[in-house]
Image 1 (tube, rainbow, N blue to C red):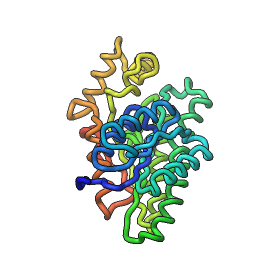
Image 2: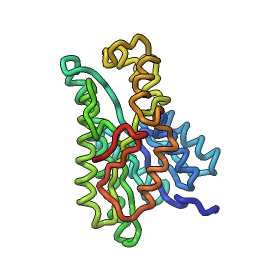
Image 3: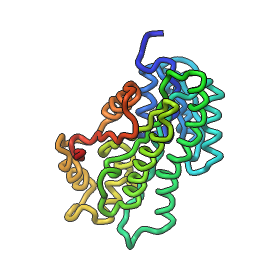
Amino acid sequence: MENKRLNNKVVLITGAAQGFGKGISLELAKEGANIAVTDINKAGAELCAEQINAEFGENRAIGIAADVTDEMSVKSMVEETVQHFGRLDILISNAGIVISGALDEMSKKNFDLVTAVNYTGYFLCAKYASEVMKKQHEKEPHKFFDIIEINSKSGLEGSNRNFAYAGSKFGGIGLTQSFAMELVQYNIKVNAICPGNYFDGSLWTDPEKGLFKQYLDSGKVPGSKTVEDVRKFYENKVPMKRGIQIEDMVRAILYIIEQEYETGQAVPVTGGQVMLS
């Protein structure tokens, strides 16, 4: 096999049937990784896995149905990954949900849903992935393993009328730092990536539920009359005048995996929109 950056690594990615997760899955497979494509959308996960296998070789990917808010589903997801590939080197906790709204508009039901997916889901995935990684560490004490949360720039600064999401992401960074302290003795590095806005993804562009539509309807961008007005407003907030692309994310992921002297970090990939002080 050609020597690639992630040869023989087994990567489990949640929320991987579409958007960031699917793009990351394809790019890491290109780097030689074996991919467990997991998503609540079983058909989408299997379709992504089929695409990887068609492009990069048989048995390079498996599609798994998983609900990150359900503990037994997460446990089964990790077990199925290990049964298929024999190990687990990298968890990318990517599954997420955004429901925006002002304080007087947000229902407890929606608040709880965002928290369950973005915060509790990350905890559950890290819990069961780290159990496997600890056992592997006993046999391979010199190897490193990775837990990577796909966080958000909203985990680094507040987000107007989007507090449920921002709060869950702030909490995710707290989990990342705490997990990193606990798991470092097992050579498990735990880091978060905080991307800027992926304006080309369905999260933003879906005509019914996308954030451009949500923000237009909620009046979050004063004076906007169309979704294009909203998009232009957000693009102008980025010094580089564009949203993040999959390639930008993958470069950050590969950096985190390849370096062996960093853990507990939140790495911004925001085009300069959020700068750490």
